[in-house]
Image (cartoon, rainbow, N blue to C red; front, side, top):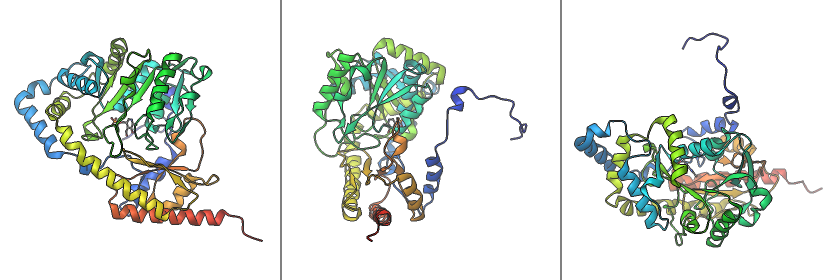
Length: 407
Ligand SMILES: Cc1ncc(COP(=O)(O)O)c(C=O)c1O
């Protein structure tokens, strides 16, 4: 494109605050086929029901083509809103169809929530660490992030002091198989969190794209269901990306009607509505209970891959390292000895043709430098073993090189 040497446009202050992360640049290399990459956050394409999706789209076009190709309501396709409301109710949270807004991926839900709930310098509470995409979304609205500490059982409700919660617009929480750590909020903490939220009048955004991907242990009640009748406000984000396919770009927000109306106004300004054809096709797929027959295969696949990675970690990583043991989802979080820097380690790892995501960007405030995220779902088993062995050897070598030599 031909354009003047000196741009005659001016970026908004908001746009100027957007930066491309150095890590993203490094990770571009990981798309090379000779690199074993545990860096991606993508679900396994083996789980995409391509033929079922193809049939649904063609059935919708054949039977209701004209309305599927027409503009539709901003709130979403009514039968899909009803299905989501019924599904949530079956999972223990009483939700009405008019409390469901269909969005173009739950990532859009995060952006809409930022748009309607955050003013510059508003306080937003996030887990430590938290989903990078949410931090990016909310950042556009220039909040003041405050971190809530967490441990193996998820965030610590006791850390929600009056001082921390004062004037906070909301807490963003990931109760199941959290991205990036794979951790799950324990039942006791769920109760304590909802109780603290009610006490401090702190709304919770419950983001749960991985909840259906549990392959160990019993499902735990969601925060939305637990909050009902407690006085706490929970707004829930859900997604079809991990249970069907992310390319569909389909998710939802469940929220009380007055908030939903505002979110719908914001969505209208953004994209009028989510693609009618996609909503109708997905409704066609889920309405007959397809997910119940489809999800066990994805869970089995992810469980197998997770087990292979955990075994490989135990066999090849130095004893000073430790890592999470997820009950579902796609990620394992590794903590290396303090003093190690995983951003530097990534450069060395790429030379060994293996990649991961360093942990630092997942912290809203300054965080430790010695953590990293591994995704186990898109790499074949043999390559998982090979890649983890390479990484284990590199970490062992780096540790040995940094130890003071005996006199
Ligand atoms: C925690 C979390 N929330 C939201 C999203 C966005 O999902 P989508 O927009 O595909 O529904 C992701 C994607 O990986 C995620 O990990």
